[in-house]
Picture (cartoon, rainbow, N blue to C red):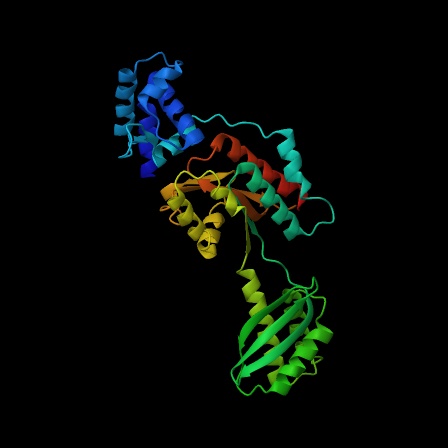
Length: 350
């Protein structure tokens, strides 16, 4: 709230001349990544002002917190507050071109599995925006094909699940006291023969029904092993959305500050924190923009995240798609692109 109040005051303090100079500085910085000097703006001619006049205005903008002067240059850069004010109050968004729309929709052809379609679309978005593409996929409803238990100790076992889609995943399981290898084998046989073709939630429901009707033909320890084996998957899947990141190499190409890019690439390895950041965009009605220190994760790398939720048939949010790049990315072009991608996913994936 304090930042938005400061931003509103700064915007109100700008006259037409200051707005014009500030806009040109931001545009030039976003294009080059370099500090912008008064002489450069004066030579441009469109302002019709001397370098001295422009310097005076730049000083005022700096005092408002909208510009900063790097130690190595007499030019100015927009601050994160300045970029936020530009994005929220001054930027003129561009239209997504027909070619860009066609490219984004190409990965969503009929018959393509949802996760593969999302991965392709994210890679396309990454290439078009020259950022890293991100998509938060809802946790998959795993369908059981086969389950096996591998005893590790009297108190622990490895549960191996083969899904109907051919995927294989493992989980560690704490065993109830008294469970023997023969008990685990009986539990695996029951799950594979009686519960194959069901999701975890469906399998737990059927198990409960069959035990209640005394049709499970399982002793108490085997029932406990089956229940524990299913529960470890059910609770894990519900809490574990899938994060797809594509196009990290785009962050390196043409980078002005390679140290910040290295920091950003390190940040992208923190998937849990990145998921938490994207989850903040789930409740948004429109595209969310996080600039620099507005996100704790990317405060050191000085990066921006643009993210938008996509929805299912019922209108409920099922995931988030977006990009991450340097704070000097082309907001006017990329924001509409992310928004269009989210709307396309809502229309075609659901």
